[in-house]
Amino acid sequence: MSELPDRLPDYAERVLAVAELIPPGRVMTYGDVAEWLGEGGPRQVGRVMALYGGAVPWWRVVRADGVLLPGHELRALARYREEGTPLREAGSSSEGHLPRLAMRGARWDGTGAEDVTPHT
Image (spheres, rainbow, N blue to C red):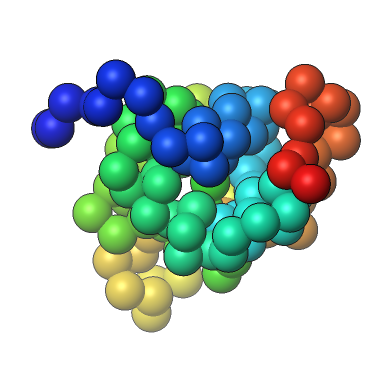
């Protein structure tokens, strides 16, 4: 794992701050984070999480379809189960038999997260 720079880009700091605010058992999509911040998009948020997200609850920033992050499925699944995050159990026909996030119940809208001011 590479070392973090002395100072993160401002946008990265804001994305990571939002990730830290997401309560246990809840998630936000990459697009939700970008929309909440009022800048960037899902790809930019995903890039920040890929580069710098290891120090924050990365498993709480997810794909909109609820599919677990490829390459990190089992680690994320353990966290979701530990935190009680709503899951949709996989049917026997689904690849790898891994559950998905139950987005309707798991998605967090940022309510109560006044600690981070969205970029204006």
